[in-house]
Length: 264
Ligand SMILES: [Zn+2]
Ligand SMILES: [Zn+2]
Image (tube, rainbow, N blue to C red; front, top):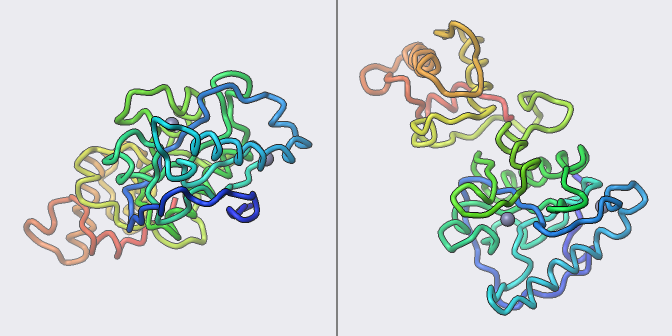
């Protein structure tokens, strides 16, 4: 990760002490929502990026309606893939729309606009992915990756980034399912499965179930949670010796950890 700390980009101090947050359900992706010059994506334009982060912070500190404590985002990612530390890990964002939404997810903003640079670069998508993984590792972010518009009336993060989020926010050049060296996918919580998620985590889980000889798949596995996933997972629970309600096919923490799903 090409990380730029607050000191390195010349952040102003926070206006108020930032609220500590223990963990979140995941990360929400944002865009600037105003014009960003297309020329900013040029390789020789990176010298402007720290300036732009300072401008975003200054605008947020000057916003008398929102009364932000600081730049609202936990991180900002430039078109060259650098991750600028915003509020940072274990700090509650101010960007998601209301206090409940701010407690539920971290916020990462891409330097992408509603005019000019409207499509993220591949380097930027890789940087967003770096920021997400950093917040998982250092900030106890959960597995969810969503857009600002999920649960709040806004166009943010714009059509291009939102389509990427809906594909599971894959790192460019991969299907989003390659096993990384960062270990295993943490248990996403029982409720997460009951919402019938569409996620690369489901695909990765299914591949592990197949490898363990616990397949009930006619085709797949794929990212959409289906009854075939539940039946396959039930075989895994029975293989572990679980019975009754403990082998109902709905993932629990113990069986999940035993499955060792590679981190997506
Ligand atoms: Zn937003
Ligand atoms: Zn840059």
